[in-house]
Length: 372
Image (cartoon, rainbow, N blue to C red):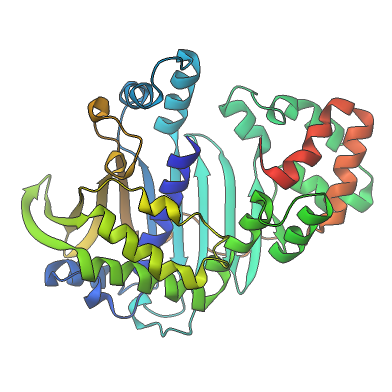
């Protein structure tokens, strides 16, 4: 489940940032696709939404095939339900049409993840400031209050109301309200708590550079564009449901090796992702279905199973569908009233909660391992 969520997030962010590229004519070798992407880039803000285009039963069948004998059916069923409900939304905004941006200009961004209800995670980057909202209560309800931390969410929410006024920003964060954060400070905080260098929390804080740094954004765009330009082939796929369709075909392993090589110079800023995973991509073609409406790119669908080295032959497809549109499906603006959350205040709040309820001691472990 974690791998699919990561894939959904990364593909969506890459796709929406790619639209902001000034040289969109190089995105593929097909002029129709380039024109469709260019048309979308005529706007000052663009959104993308993503979800798995499959029913809970279909996803459960895939997970069952993948897990093999010995897997717990109830757990696979629960994971399938969550993945079927998972929704991702992101938007970028600039002061001019996106396809007029120079390499040195960054875009403001916003993203949210939900499971069909309230957002469980919101991230906004505006004017080099990063804002975060974590809905622990919503997430706990979605997963049935399972996990070392999430099962204690009601107790944590109750204790949050007793925090002293000096910890009001930590109180807001624990209640799922917007706060402003300094990723570097939280990376150092994870080390202070005993996390080793390269631990998940520390890697995650570094990966926020893609949201706040123009150079990293542009390198990411260039890496994706170069991979598509060097490896993709394009063919017309006719008209369906009122949209023109184009199929872009990539030799998965060749493209993965090229993308890995292109990302190595900024791998540290991206949180040191395991680029060797790209070498394990199955050696077969991957097809991207692009839908074009009114001359603009409106949707992209790709079968994630074709990128999964552990997908058995009988597992069937697992389509990821991304939909694009002008405007902001999530608001790209600094949240009103969001104050700076300092790591030491969050530590003090959680220490207070742990003293009152010793069973909440797993909260401190979570800060450095991100294991909910």
